[in-house]
Amino acid sequence: AAGAVPGVTVLDVDPGVETNRTVITFVGEPEVVLEGAFQLMVAALERIDMSAHQGAHSRIGAVDVVPFVPVSGVTMAECVELARRLGERVGRELGIPVYLYEQAATSPERRNLADIRAGEYEGLAGKLADPAWKPDFGPATFVPRAGASVIGARSFLVAGRLVGGATLLRFYVLHCIFIPIVASVLMIVHFWRIRKDGSLSGPAPVMLDSEAAKAKGRR
Image (cartoon, rainbow, N blue to C red; front, side, top):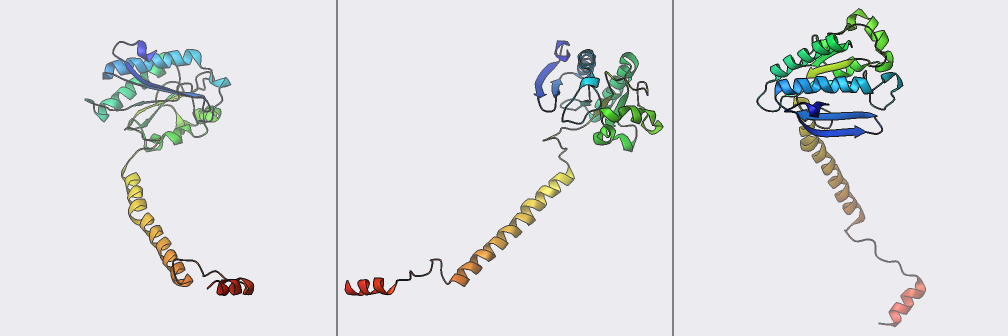
């Protein structure tokens, strides 16, 4: 559906058998991507019934998450605006609850995707009944077939996690501190064994008396 919008280029379609979840990545000019995302949501909501859905990945809706990622010639602030415009339109025209996350979040408590997904689809009805979890757009009512959607703006993900300062620090500590310490300990043990055994070679062979006599006779 997104690829049918003029100007949209679909880069990847990654269906997961175990997770029963498909990740679709596409690019284009901001307004084109905005329309592509909406048309994709319309098509998904027509085809997916969350009341019968099972999968290993956490989720709260048929279109679980829609992140806008700045690639080139667009700022994060512009992606935030796109996310909010899509959320407003989805809530108004499609009638499903929408939460904004990451850079588009309306409060710190909603910045983390995992916090919004807590309880997953099965606990969504109870979450929507809690005033603290009133959707940013759309009705605060449970729609069994569609669930809810999370829309936002964020940076690139690598292996499912953001590469930030904390990640780089852990990488530095691992390679510059932990690995040298382990290598040093192994070297100490190695030289201790050499010192303990007396040399790099094993002990001299032990000959029985009969073997010693035969060896002496051959001299």
